[in-house]
Length: 227
Image (cartoon, rainbow, N blue to C red; front, side):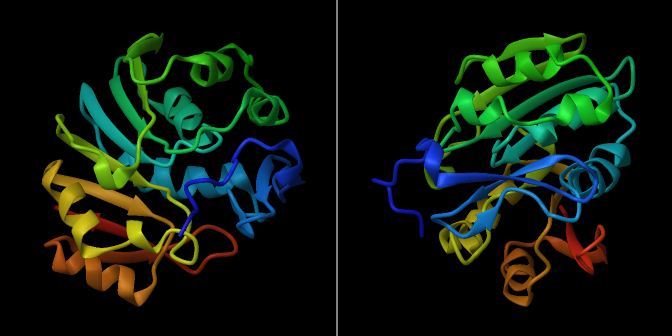
């Protein structure tokens, strides 16, 4: 469990690791965890959250809840991969936002061969206010603890990208998944990188239909949970 008194923005706490696809991930030395796979930060996020999340919905408007804003990579990939006329409402929960010094070392725009303006707009958007980031893309970054988050919206997709059970076991419980199940629309999905047995059991106890699907490079399986 993460200590509430931990200082998350001490620059010496982090290393920056170039992953196999050239993109940078942040390594938290205190927690002993990387924010993304060293086999490819962009490749991993694309596989789990875009291919097996966003791309499954052909709707004029999609509402997404992300658990763990982290580096902002999932948000950036969603903004550039949405259909042209698709409206995205993107809410992202983060208890411990990173500071600008850390964000400045991320090379996602260069790797994706896009202007850095979009990513900069995402990273500098004010917290706890819904803001238009680009055409038909609206972002609300929510600075809070998931355990105390009270959803007032219903969502089509949940990107569950919290730290692992080794670090945040309190977020991978039946009670949390019940909360997330209840804020999903019918046939909505939750997609996540973990495929551990106790995670699947907790999801099933929350009434999700749980499917184990092929993972990105370096990970055999991921989970898609359906309401």
